[in-house]
Image (cartoon, rainbow, N blue to C red):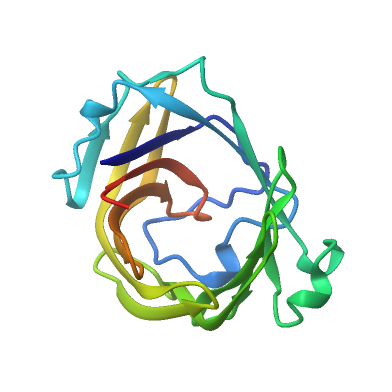
Amino acid sequence: MKQCFTLASAVFFSLTLSAQSPLLSSQMLAVGNTVNTRVVQHFDILDTTIQGANATWDFTALSVDLGQPAISMTIVDPATTPHASDFPTANYAWRENETNYYRYFHLTSEKMERIGSYTTGLSLYSDPQIEYVFPFDLGTTSTDTWETANDYGTYDLHCVGRGTLMLPGVTFSDVFMVRCHITGSFYAFDAYFWYSAVNRAILVQYIVGDG
């Protein structure tokens, strides 16, 4: 059983208030924003059965595992990264600051596709993975196949909740809960995400499966 839990601990500097409207691609977290995350303890309170409209997720009992390092992710312009030439169609990217690992995406008004990454080496998707479709709201679903040189599988996404997320010391009033089932050639796992309905900043991530 594989389990991973992260808790957002950053304040984002380009938030735009939303009145429960669908998330558009133009509202994705902008270049220059950083999300700081920490592994948490007491993950048994992450209740994934709380779903639907006007949900309230009270996760105020979460606490940071100080024995685990912080992870910082920054949204970057892929053209400014060291591997830009390997991803000529990318127009959106994440940098994991501690390692300088990069994930590359192609973002349009209709969808966001993962097209590759550069960690310890280059990984390109011969069949890109559609991670989001727009406009995005409660009830949005997307199922897509993906393939790289070393692996292949499916990415099955369902937006199953929208409401208020309570974390230690902070409350977010407009949050999506997303359930993903990810399969690969030799593994399968479920991932749950709670993220801002304003700009898709990940607030809590919960991964469990047999990968």
